[in-house]
Image (cartoon, rainbow, N blue to C red):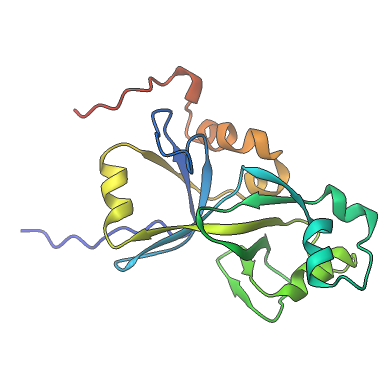
Length: 189
């Protein structure tokens, strides 16, 4: 019998299949931050919310008026877990009080990255989310087995160089798939 080691999806994209019924994840592209035998964590990167960086900065440092450019920096719904907690994905380079390198992209969770972006000295490209997606041990694997998701290799151009409303289709196209041509019915061969 062959000894098969598990395959984990850290630093990959999850593409929600058209039949995804969970409203938290329907029509989403999720970047997988961590995936181990204990579970997984990801950030939805294509669902902007009504908030922008200026709104967040008004809460974090009310004594300073946010620069006008901050109104054009969207805040994304990163997932349904801890929706009051911020996460910033940005190209590897600058590090902040809480930055983790994820192989070509970094994740920062401290407020100083937001202040740096606002002050024009932060990362040139970023995706700022509130909340995250979390899966318990085996949960994501079960969802993959039931055809809820497609996986796609990470591509920084999709994350930082593609408009949010085009990211899902861009990731699918990287696999040679047009999501509009897929049925909303799941099947198993």
